[in-house]
Image (cartoon, rainbow, N blue to C red; front, side, top):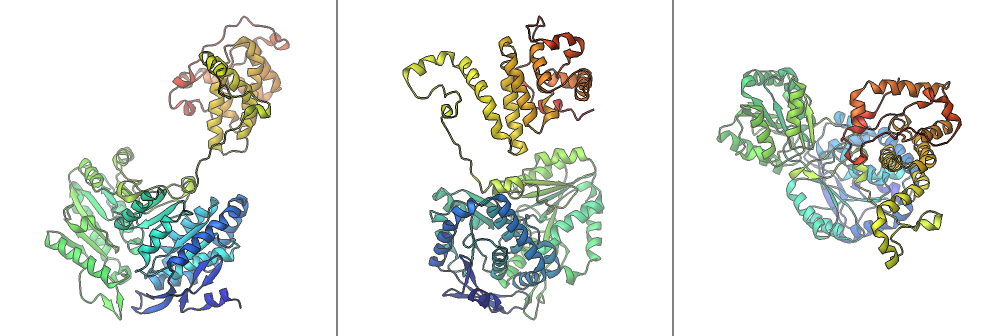
Length: 634
């Protein structure tokens, strides 16, 4: 048994992971379980030297990892997921022991690689998601664990190493509370650190953001804050009650999108409150009662509730008692407060337990103003039977995500998520989440070296600058000559990149459609766009021709004639497009089929007396041109 395995096999100590090896460290701190109220194990406490060494190790591993093919990174992530799934019960017990989270619920969330990122409240979700995005985009990472669940973060690092992640690509360290500020500042200020990802409370978020700004380090900040649910007068009460309670009670406020505040329209407040009390009365209060991680947090929450009750709020569900500790286990809640007001401390402070407060509003406008004035912008929800109203309200709400007739906490890994205002910045999950760990780099090169036209202004000389008066015409010539080579750069790009490139080249084609001597080259160019992109149905309806000769070349190169099925389909689409006024108004005239009426002209390439069609300036097209021009097919 090697040293790494020996350390991992010890249930009494949580090691550091640096350069693929597990280390005990020179200092330790005690981890106390909120479930038993006793110490469950000790964890290695990283020193400033350990943190620096972890960063330098990740920096050394970056060059090789960045050059790894995406498929290889993908395979490691898939294997890590399999390992996590196979160890779900073991890892669920770690989380239950360290944070008090329900073990069964934990098993359902272990495999969610793209969900919320939070400090201690959901370590597997937060840790895996942050690490997966960084590694998938070719970065290396150093994870600084919260002091509460160090073994959970160690388990994440262990899974990646067992999946074959190269040494140094992922380093996991933890430290005691006293050394945490020093370690955080040192890590941010280290020159090798290029991106900082933090999730937590607003006060610490401000401090970290200030340190990042001082060192000009980009950051991805996720702060919780307050999340609102607006219950409109026409809401389905049953749906609204289920939605707000699920959003408030699920995971015992261990997710930063939990429903904290409910704004109920005065016209249905009686019916809503009655349904709320009825639903809560049917639940087992002992099952719902969440575990509090420490006594200080319990005391803080009880103080805020007592203060709110003295200021006029009433307790709709739950009770404050001195018997909330059994055999050292701390538990509190759930609570539902009524008659809450924005001037109460509990309206603006984070509780970290299952509690939500209700407030009566007279109109939807008042509800929107209250929600927007809070200064937070993570997640909100709107309950109404009128979808149009729901969409209208959601557009007014200043939140990163708005759910209509659903709980605040719902999320999808393929959709970007992030807050605004005091809830942070940046986006997690989906393509936007990966882009947080990428930067745009621009390359310039001398075109003449590849046989293309040289740049007009290079090299800089008086002779080249004197020709700037005719730069418009010359630039068109240059762009046209380069089009054949330039478009091939996008052949293996993403659909989004291809779409942007297509629009650019189609607009460039318009510049030449009124130049009779260019019809041969323009048709060939149109064919390049047509054949090399995955958007052929979209493209053929954006291509237009100024002369029959140009169209003739295009059709001949495409091997079309009046008996070809593809040609017939084009002609059919053209006839259909004539009757679609919105299509004709939104963009250029679709591809016409003069070959049907002028078949004899398909045998030659002479000049035509047909006048060029008139087209709109591409720059003046309406914003929805692409949508209106898209034709799904016959």
